[in-house]
Length: 408
Image (cartoon, rainbow, N blue to C red):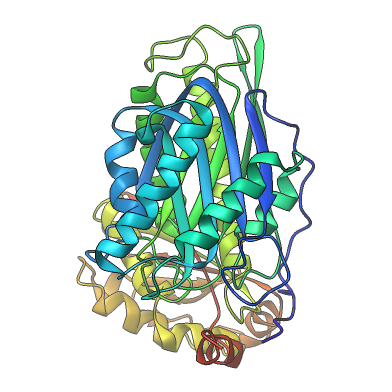
């Protein structure tokens, strides 16, 4: 089906090439569409890699092999297949990934564990190895492409290409970061979100890269939700080619470590929010700020309970200032809460303070805020200092239409 562009879309940013990264795309024709659906990123020798993956108990073979390979900390290539997730496909799915890794490792004269593979799309259909092989052969001889082309090739129900860049100073050396991501539905924060890839020319030790990514992920990709469903294929990988020539960042004590980690977190945050902006059927981008919780983790769980509530999300879609639904979501979260200390605001306007409605509450400005495409909800539990920010979108008829027709 034809999907209209999200009204919350952002233009694709200008991002510089990353030294040591060559992008190519090809048509493997995993589905009956006339577009590139295989992305190949060739990485310089010595590239460090870090990754976070779905916690789904039904993860794909791509995820299982990726988890194993990332422990070695080295990468030479990334292959992304769009249109077929290759999940829930048993031994045939694993054999397909192993065949892809063998083909690419032979072409690049590297180990199979230096080749990372991701697949996204329909679950339960084995990845056709013949199409994958042909697509890789085509990609190996294709002309290099830019970030936007590569991003379009990894998409499925995405309505716009999503990318984000940043830079950081490591002593006197400027390093660049560029990230691309796909994701629109089946988005819940059980590690990360769908498929995201960040590339940098910084020289970063694998162990520190992993630690920096996990820290960034906890405050970004693990704080978004579209529909509360966790994919079998969620993967976020960071590749550091070392071509900038900076002194290697090996620990938090290394010069520039904080600057690099902040830039990585900025890219992760922007990519995470772009996924929410492209939530299937989304018409409103929602920021939920929770404060006064028993801990930061508790605040995050309460924020996600609000963000995942169909009643809250449909109220926002209907532009209904129904703060009672937020009270409901806080109460069901299973986290410490005190009804008589709870305060709720929309768009900076408090509707309830310390367990009771505000006496002079005027719904008109709140209703006006909800008519916009950016909605802010604040919840103060009044218990302690825990806080978190979670991002989500509204729930509309468009979500049903897209997913009822997904396999067609």
